[in-house]
Image (cartoon, rainbow, N blue to C red):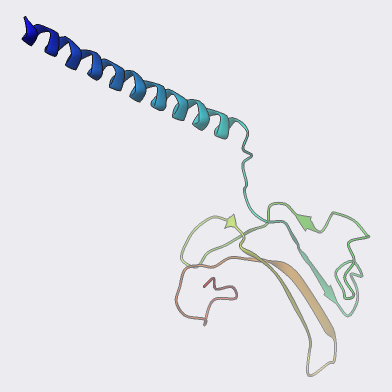
Length: 129
């Protein structure tokens, strides 16, 4: 008779353990669903994209102020990757400013770029480390 009671006690302990596991799994699922319900989809960074040659685009030139328009803002900014088709979310905004040595004309280019995953800098503007 004692063997029957000990088996029942073991069965009850296993049932309690299973109920605890079910509660933990249920709580985890509820938390996971709430996390996914309240998160937003992040697609990439926003960058200004423009070109100004000899001051022809004041909104692009330095000193830079975003007082003109959001027409030069690309959201999200997408760029190409070396050896891949299509566009991908940018990892950095860039500005290149300089002048032509032979004519003295100035140029400012703003845009976005991303790390293509190569280890060399010969074709990379942006390289994450």
